[in-house]
Image (cartoon, rainbow, N blue to C red; front, side, top):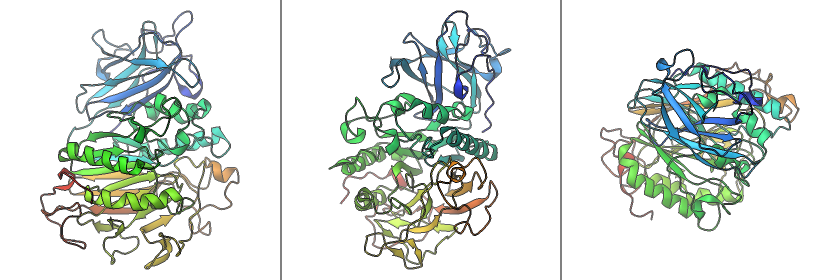
Length: 512
């Protein structure tokens, strides 16, 4: 999916490349007098392929809209008279004054390039462009772990690494259709200079960002004000505290053959995991028949390979989540939080499904109830956690086939270089690939600032591999049997691939 660059960039542009004061004619014409300041523009994922969400900040609470037209209809940067407008919901910004706005662009057609701008009257942002692809069939999406802008101690360096990863990943994968977040966009929830650096890349206005809330994104409303997400439940069990200070919620969306379910794993207290499981169950029951695959996304990795491996909440979630996810027919779980890379074996009901599955296997058959869990490393280079040794005294001890790894993980990796994850969705398989987006050279803030003492494979003993090289790749062959792939069938793994996947379409009435 090749998105066009912004059509016009005016002479008055705020820090981080965001929009200030654009007139109602050509997208770059500045408005006379005191214009409305528009900033933080970000394109978000919609509830389905024909939707996109746009969110932004504004200095005024006046009525605002998103104006949209096919790019081919613009003449010298001017939107046609019949351009569609979508009214925005505008609310007071509780973080730094001003207002935040969002709206949903609906009715998009497939295989069409669109341009949009936000504002009203005489004050408009620059025009940005995106392109829809086929609304059915194969597609690729990219998953990014913990940019956490500001965590190195240098916002500018963190922002440079984040910008470079987006540019590298999308140059290599121009047809990627979604950018999926692993959480922790910033270090401090209400520090807008960090948000400015995170939102600086124009790619975030050209490709839809599927936001996930991390633990560094809570404690204030900025996350929620920057990202409006579809089908979101902000009830107390999913919201993590007072609505005056917290952001989040659980949400879902359908994209082609995938049902994506995103959880606010910060909402963690007595009964919260049960509530999340109930949410996933309800969504799968109601929406699962429309999809071939179910992908869960949340921040706190339950099979962490590094600093968070034996956190108390992780130990509890390893008891709460895996059996439920197996019974619900989940195929892939994408996580962040631990600033290191791992890919699990096929896990069924909290156990390795096939004891014979080898470390680093490049092809795996999932079997009924088989789930693969992936943890992403840092996409910005702002912070890395070193791998930890498995503790035999804990529930998360060593792998009998590879004692350096934790028992659940087929692959664990830390090189102190930036990376991202590419997921290819095909009719009969999912491909998951961890790809280097940087080397030991700048931009790599944690290395530049000496926050880590080595860089490269094998704890720095081997020279860093080039940008675009693969850390790990696996092809997942999902279960397509006629039996029950939610764990109610015969005990033990079944490794026969048959046609006619029921998958996430099953209705789950009980988790026991």
